[in-house]
Length: 318
Length: 270
Ligand SMILES: Nc1ncnc2c1ncn2[C@@H]1O[C@H](COP(=O)(O)OP(=O)(O)OP(=O)(O)O)[C@@H](O)[C@H]1O
Ligand SMILES: [Mg+2]
Image 1 (cartoon, chains in turn cyan, orange):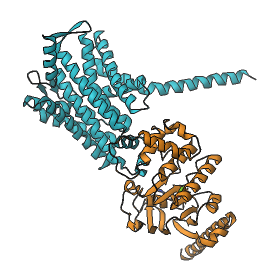
Image 2 (cartoon, chains in turn cyan, yellow):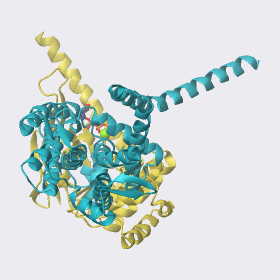
Image 3 (cartoon, chains in turn brown, green):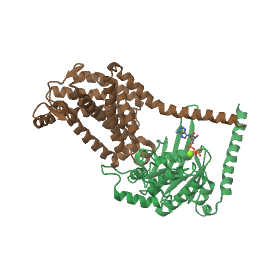
Image 4 (tube, helix red, strand yellow):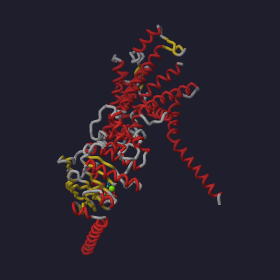
């Protein structure tokens, strides 16, 4: 049960990352590599503020804001200075590695003795359960874990709802159109570059928020924690798209959340079965590769098989 | 009133591939006037429309709408005054979004976009009403992604989008050229209706001589980045397709003559 709960909690936290990646890659159609850096940045900023005794909600928000600044920078590099998408992201991500070390002052900050965003839920549940463990669907689980799950569930629900509404407003609709057809949205009076910058800002703010929450969940921020996150996010986006068709923004968002949780569950199970944690990133990369390439390949193979069959028929006929 | 003053544009200036796409084009379009632009391939028709729409900054010259100099305005800023339909039916709509969402975007062309919900019940009713005027049955498909519609349907919707808020100037760049003959005729007729009904000021590039003699108030002929002839008023009433073709032949002959003279001169001064 702890395993499932852990997967759920991390899944919910990382679904913020997934939504950020979805926003950049699918809505804006912007190949944004900043993510690896902005996740760590969010975690670093939140961790340092927590160690200094800032209120957890403020530290978490600051982490999100820092991520937003990173996304803004990438956007400006691309739109204002005409640097390629990929390179803009790589520049910011690389720079962030040093920034993150500067922010933290060392490569790892422990949060075991600081306050956490889950504290209010913790107090609530402790009072309610009357001890430091409680029954969940017949399983005895530590209150601290249940509190974290409850907290990220609340954050996720709030963000998801907010985003769902935002994407169908006039502004949000224009943002989606800017990613779909830049020429069209310019002809409708919206500067697609502004939309790109704004969208990247939002996307990386979500990623920064995920980083801030992740640090508090695992009890530390580490300068390496963002490495490969972009691929995890993509994998989750892809699973999410397989789960739901992505016609409406609401469904796509739901798909992103479900995709992330499913992905985390799969990983938890794989690790249980003895997958070496060091191989995790390789396996994830292979998965994304397969998901990107296989559909196209399958189509090509089918077409070839059909052609071959037709040829054979053609030769047999006369 | 649209005033285009001595617009010049050279692509790849100073290289071997230099193209002088516009060589001093001036054009006045009075309020409510429908102008058609015809001309040979590469004569600069699209470049002229792009210069007016703000796709790029011209090298020289200015564009004024109602006396306001918009030459330095960005493309998106000009959209407040200008509605536009492209040759490519895919260019004017966001394929992955629904018909209703596309229309909702067009309902605020060039206006601030706030955090109000884009598609309210009231808005949908209005959409159904106006989409019905296209007589294509699209009012039942408002929630389909616009990418699933045919080119003709998309072009008709793009036209509706460009004119939903009355533009000070409507730009049409061979917007029927990529369509099959039946859809092309349908969209051309729709264009005529909308321009008549809303008394729009419009500038249309067309390859169809038939369209050029039937639809507009003024016919403008372009060649080699310049306007070589304008047909308006009583002459415009009389003009037929063969007359236009003859005018083109005339332009071409004159050019060959020029080339001939140039050849003689080159030979002399070798
Ligand atoms: N963005 C561009 N970059 C470089 N050259 C261009 C560009 N746009 C147009 N040109 C060149 O300018 C010239 C005029 O092109 P334009 O598209 O305006 O012609 P057109 O009259 O619209 O022709 P068509 O009837 O084929 O559409 C052509 O030689 C073209 O190659
Ligand atoms: Mg053209």
